[in-house]
Length: 212
Image 1 (cartoon, rainbow, N blue to C red):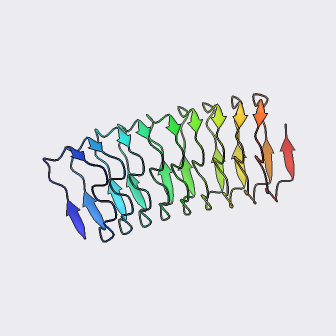
Image 2 (cartoon, one colour; image 1 turned 45 degrees about the horizontal axis):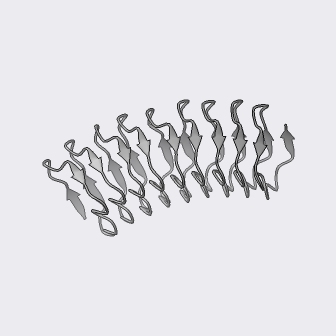
């Protein structure tokens, strides 16, 4: 089913279309400025979404469990992505973080099992807990030099991850940050790191080289 939101609408409220499991397409007009928490959560048939220019926040859980969502077009007006915004978007293959976003929060892309390409820019300072947990198609990641801390389980269970570039400037690699990354073969820890957390590289069974 397709749905066209009237041009008079400025806000899409909390859970407005949540669990609308037959919704395949929705047209969001340019009049919309705010999309609240969980607005499209568990719209399991939704395949693509375009957010209009002027929206500044991708609210918590807004597209969580949209398991068919493969295309997301975000405007440059976005300055904030909240927790679990895209969790369990299992068909999403690529994502470019808008240039105004400075933090990847908890569970933002957790269980995005098809996510193979994530473009992070050099204004991002934080990669939160479980931000990319179980992104099992992700093969390589370059963490921007602007990031100072990788939180716990940020890349846990990224079972295809072969290469990670950790920049100088990182001070902490959180608990289990890269655990169960079974294809990760080598890692260089920069001099700026003062703490490597508990089980940070636990069960990285291919890890044969580590430079500290």
